[in-house]
Image (tube, rainbow, N blue to C red):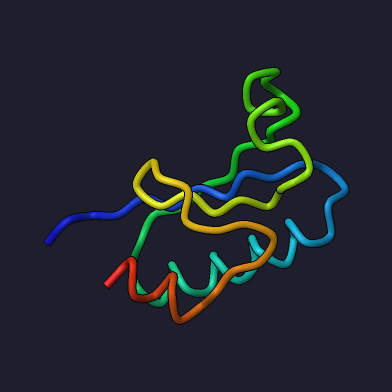
Length: 79
């Protein structure tokens, strides 16, 4: 079984990012999937790519969604 990796592209002081991180943490804990965060403001290329779209959910290196976690869709991608 493939081990997935989820990353939440985030920034400091972003309320929607905090909500997305909590959702991802809960879902990934239930499914045994590793996850982390990446602050887009620490890298000019990331800031240019993601801008105001944070939070962005990245699954296995591919953009999965942004602004909020679509739980059924994320669970399907990780199952």
